[in-house]
Structure formats: structure tokens, C-alpha cells
Image 1 (cartoon, helix red, strand yellow):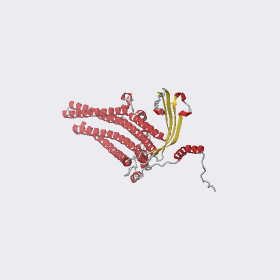
Image 2 (cartoon, one colour):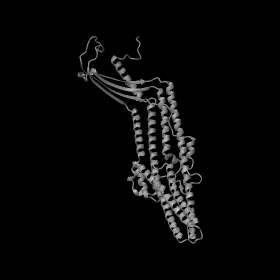
Image 3 (cartoon, helix red, strand yellow):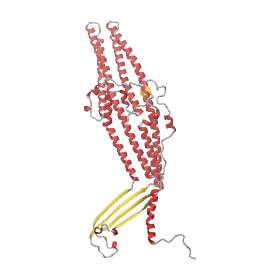
Length: 489
């Protein structure tokens, strides 16, 4: 009895159809099968150091009372000064500052690079066309000794290719580029923070110089009156010539302190113009005439440590750079494995007179598996380099966290200590003023010499100037603290 085969014999046409379908089925299988990404998956750092910092207080040693509050820091912290002039200057700086404009271009460049990397997920199209006049060789036509006639020929092709990201190299590259784009955004925000703070500082320096000038000029007016009085007493024979010389010397000393303050005020004005992206001539002239410092109408809000860690752009920038370098490890590791590309090619070539004929057309479909057998030492070196880069970025991230804590604590300490110093200076000025007034009365009655008056007035002028300088320093410390807290974006 004839044995029946379990595999029926296929007809020739059926076999050819199956052969043609094999590449298609293989291509569909490769495209549909899932890929896995080599290399470590990134997660936000959970080191003990980060948790240790996050659980600390921003205001240690009882500094959470009085001039400091734990309220959330508003992004536009400069509005706490309630100055329309300052609001306008910072608004102008955020629109026209040159550093900020450059940072925006850097951000745009990073976003464009991300789109370029993401395009690797899409199929790639290549189109070619080559018309030419001439003839092929007879040997290529398998006709030795035959010279084909000259004619117009053409060749054209269409290639569609898609890389199957079987080992996640493209995925890791996109992760890295996304993190770099986010880091560029954080860098842009960091520039905004600095521009806002430095604009406020330049404006405050102008005002602080104005306050000091006003203080010196007031002392100078009183000293000139005292010098005139001494001159009158000299003419009346009630004062010696030495007293008059000393009085005039004190006037000259006060006059000599004015030019440095004027230079300081003008330099701050020039700095403000640069920060706002303009020339000094375009700034309102009355800005340079500011003679009163802004003051906060409420305790300075500092928030808490977790909100600080989320708000500081430099911390976010370092964290994103760490994510990018971590993804680069996977990019390097994928070089150990082959690459698979699905391709569809369509071509047409022949005489131009036969353009479109079926015998001029050809096509192919199938996967292309390419594997450059890796130099293991070189690939391992690249992987090791990527791991070292991620390790360095992790250390920089931790250092940035510690630096943020240091800057905030230092700014808080300076602010609180300057507040205490200012209170002492106010008491000193009050006492010096009473002493100077009484000394003048004793001098006019002839009970003390002019040296006593000169000493009292000089110490009063020094105390008043120190108080004015302290007021400027206090405003500068507030702005430094706002900068350390990361407000302004």
C-alpha cells in the first residue's frame, strides 16, 4: 500500500508564492516583536546624602522667627518690595538681556537635537534618479566585440528603510537627548534667576549709593555750618586759628568721600543698562537719582528644604545631566549587538524610450542584519567611559545639592547678622547725635575746646554713613538670599 506523506506536495506556483512571502513575514515579525534596552534604567538619585539634606531645616538655630518665615517663596519675589520701577526693570531685563537671549538659542539648539534623534524612530526615505547619455560596454551586455549604440538611459530608485531598535540603542539615545534638552531648559531658567537677581542688585546699589550720598551731604552741610561758626568765633577772638583749620579739614574730608560714591552709583547704573539689554542713554535718568532703599513689608519667605531642592534650576540641571549620561551607558553597550534594518527597494533602469515598461522595474523587500564584529576592547572602553561619566555627574549632582544648602544657610546667616548690626548702628547714631548736639552747646559757651566738637561730629558722620551702608548691605543680603533660594523663573 502506498504511504501517504504528512506533508502534501506543493505546486510550483504555490511554492513561489510562499517563497515570496517569507521575507514579508520575517519583516513583520521583526517589526512586531518587542525590543529591550541594554544598559541601566535611570531613576532619580536616592542617595543618603540627598535624603539627609532634604530632611534638614532651612532656618537652623532658631532663625525661623522674626524677619524670616517658612511661607512659600513666590516666583516673582521682587514684587515683595512693591516697587513699580523695579518691576519694570526686571521685566525689561527678562525680555532683552543678552545672556538670556543666548541661553534661549542654546535651548532651541538642544530641542532641535532632540527632534533629530527622535527622527531615527521613523522610516527613512531615499530617492535617486540619474539620466545619462552613452552606452554600456559590449562585454557587460555579454556580446564581445559589439559596441552598443549611444542613447539616453536612466536609472532611478526608491529605498524605504526602518531600523528595528531590538537592543534599545535608539531608545537610550532619545532618553539621553531628552534629558539634555531638559538640562538646557534648566540652564535657561538658571540664567533667568541670575538676571532677575542681578538686575535687582544693580538697582539697589544705585539706591544705596544715593542714600549714602544723601547722608554725607547732610553731614557736609552741618560741618560747613560749623566751619562758618568757627570762623565767626575766630574773628570775635573766642576761637583759635587751629580750630578753624580743623573745621575746614573736616569739610574737605567729607567732600572727598563724595566722588567715590558718585562713581559707585554711576557704575551701578551702567551695569543696570547692560542687564536690561540697552545703553545707559536709553534708561530713564531719574533711576540714577534714587535716594531711598526698598524695604520688605513682611517677613522674608524662604519655604522649606524640599521645595528648595525642586526649585533650584542648577539642581534640576545636574539631575538631568546625570540622566543623560546614564542613558549613554546603554548607547555604548548596544554596540556589542547587531543592527537590524527592514528595507524596501524599488528601482527602474533602462532606455528612456522604455520608461515605465515592466521589464525595467525591480523591487526587493527584506531585513538587513548588519553586525560589525566589535573590537571588544574598544567597546568595553567606551562602556567604561560612559559609566565613569555617569559617576562624575552623580558626584557633581551631590555637590550641587550641598552647595545649594551652603548658599542658603550663608545668605540667611548674613541677613540675620546684618539685621542685628543695623539695630546696634541705629542705637549708636541716636547716641552720637545727642552727644554731638550737647558738645556744640558746650563749645559755644566756651566750656570745651573745638577738638571735642570735631571728634563728636566726625564720629556722628561715620556712624550715619555706617548705618546707610548697612541699609544697602541689608537689601543686598536679601537679594542674595532670594538668589540662593532659586526664585525668579
